[in-house]
Every structure is written in structure tokens, then in C-alpha cells.
Image (cartoon, rainbow, N blue to C red):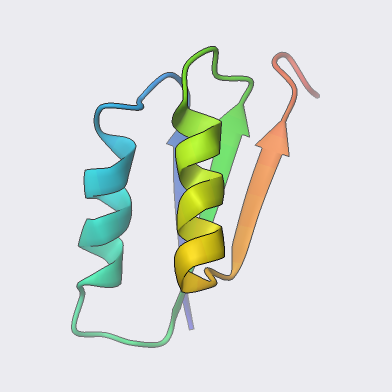
Length: 67
């Protein structure tokens, strides 16, 4: 299995394209880990929508500045 880790911070205009790109790969044994570090735009909500729609493996939402 391949793990694709994507940092997410205020990228609402591009995160959908990024997720679609991973989903459209020919290799099928993957998990997508989206790490939202407290975005102030809709980035986190868009990630949640994709998880609900396609049942992605994992989303991690971390409050800004989390250590």
C-alpha cells in the first residue's frame, strides 16, 4: 500500500484537483491522508465532503499550531 500525505492549509481552490488526481491514478492500493492545519477557508470542509462522498481512508484535522 502507498500512503499519500497531503498538507492542507487554505487551498480551497486547489484541494479538489489534488484529491481527484490521486483518485485517478492507475495504481489502486493507496490511502490518502489529508492533514488540515486549521485552514481559515473551506479546505477542511471540502476534504470532509470528499471523505463522505467516496469513503477515503483517512482525514486528519489538526488545530492550527498543534504539536
